Length: 294
Image (cartoon, rainbow, N blue to C red; front, side, top):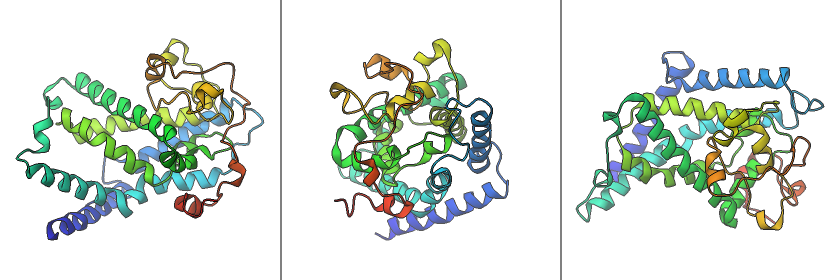
């Protein structure tokens, strides 16, 4: 037990130091704090210059709530629980494997740090994105998980900051299901993670942004605003009741598994879910949902 408490303590102190370094600009390419700010400002600028829904205000409904979610989920949530939980859970998992004489490295099929940079980044990116695509499907398929995911779908006007409006349980689910696939490929560096992370954040912001972008043939590879708006559609056909367009970054998974759905321009469709008018509106009440659910 003492070992795990030490891991938790070190996790808090290490992440706090990282957060301070980020804000004070003591970091370079791995500075997620200013990286997120720069990406957000650029995409918000695109919303101002190339709006898809021209009647939607730049400071749309719940804009500031989503901005708060963006920084809370991206930084403070890690400080409060995720880093300590992830590190201690990983150590507990390794210790349990040790009881039967194996370790997490026993699952490792290759070390991607031995691959050329481009191949390493591509493999890491594909494994992460495919795992997240399946996780996203699960969030829609099972009511227990859907109750958490409702927070993200409670957005009523799409904008870049809606990307990071999500329940604090979601990263726990995503990280848990991502752990084994990443352990299997192993050996990726912090620079690899940062490169993929910034790319995914950029595409995620654009997916939710009110921008009139057409990716041409790349729409079959990359998720985009005109595809993702249908993922948030309030009304879907009965045979699509568990959702459509689950892509986070790569839309190709939806085309391969036949979950793609763009029947017509979704520019002005209503987004949300059934009875969303009864869903909690405040950050705190959304954070404790589904406790108190009627």
